[in-house]
Amino acid sequence: MSEMILGLSIVSLLIWVYLLGFRGQFWQIDQRLPEGDTGIASVCVVIPARNEADLLPTTLRSLLSQTFSGALNVVLVDDQSNDGTAEVARETAEMLGKANQLQILPAAPLPAGWTGKLWALEQGIQKGMELQPDYFLLTDADIEHDSDNLRNLVSHAIEDDRELVSLMVRLRCVSFWEKLLIPAFVFFFAKLYPFRWANDPTRSLAAAAGGCSLIRREALTRIGGVAAIRQALIDDCALADEIKSTGSRRIWLGLTSTTISLRPYDSLDTIWNMVSRTAYTQLNYSPVVLAGAVLGMTIVYLLPVIGILTGNLISVLTYVLMTVSYFPIVRFYRCSFWCAFCLPAIAFLYLLMTIDSAIKHWQGQGGAWKGRTYERS
Image (cartoon, rainbow, N blue to C red; front, top):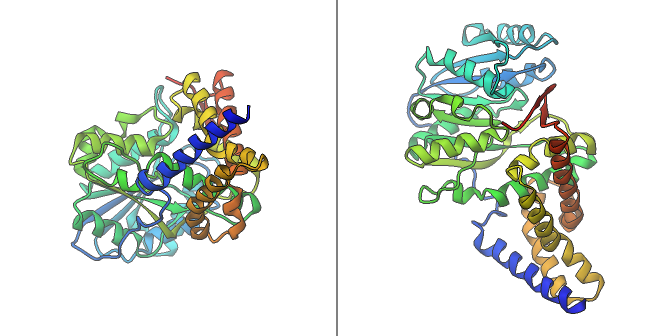
């Protein structure tokens, strides 16, 4: 038994050596949007909004107050809200004297074969196409944009000739559970989709963050709009893959600390539901891949702790490498340094969320979001 633990400990160590040295430096936080002010362009912002009256005064104000000097129009798609979302949006624009820049579009009933968010985006994009903008900014109703964000996004897209420029916005990290689990959410995402590899035109890997994605109009037209991914639950990465695989392959994804998500995740339950909604989708609904994920996460994250308890020095080295890799994102989110030492326990919770995601799928619950449940097509 001890020989088996020793052998698996060596495997775990080798995996972490690979992750730190050969996985696109995913654990670094160096992919950041540069400042710029290049060229004149027109942008149409599309916001799908379903019961977002509480956050819209802040988020819409941040968009309508941008330092961007080009033409800016906002299409807000009111996805059958019952909390006065449209009225709040209209009042906010009027208070800013920007009512002429905002169009509010009531969403049509959700057709079969579409997810709610993508159907709302599709309608907003089609409305925005009437303006023939150079770029579309697809953003969520809970994102507060830095005043220079749009200017920097457009500048980078023009200067670096990118068809898609996307930002992983800074997620809210205030409560205990947010501080414990949110940095890991970004860490695991970056491990699956190393930003450097996504940004490399010579690699096929593609990724984006749906909360803030600037897309060249020609690229959207080329892929047939979001109809190409109408059933995707992980829609941001699916859209990035469509764009990268059919065009110049020049997309870009980075981190930002100034454009933020206001969505609160105050409890373990809210974070659990966020992760379990799409975790099994990420595994392509495969029981075999799920079993591999359980085995892999056990070896990579949990075995080092077991090894340390048995006095295994190899496991101590593995745990050090694990902690070192996690520390940059912990520091980025301004969490206490001790959080970096909690990665095995955090990974165990995420593993349970993934298993729960599979169980919900097997029970026919699909991906539940905003009052809707989606089954696998």
